[in-house]
Image (cartoon, rainbow, N blue to C red; front, side):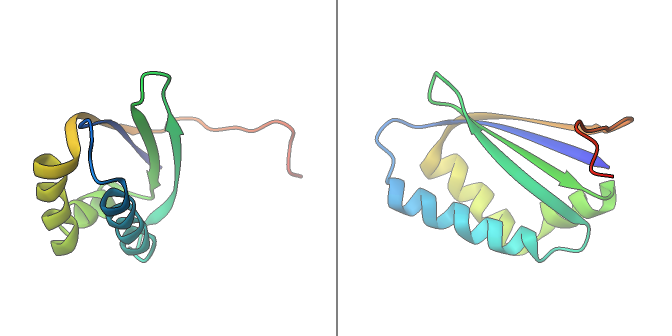
Length: 102
């Protein structure tokens, strides 16, 4: 399992409706990508956002990174929505849950 951490800082005064629509479209697209396993989002006390996306392989991440509409939206994000962001991609070497689902 590969994990993508996308830590976002939005620009002050962005068009929240346009931002939400772009996010929903990206979620629709990535959900249809082979190898996509899920995403969760969190809000920071400082107004930042953290998306935690799971993919089955590095190849699945690369396919998403190169998806044409995603590439356009990445450019739009840098120009219109984001003050800055950090992306970390890591391999999960262990995962367990409690309570057990068995």
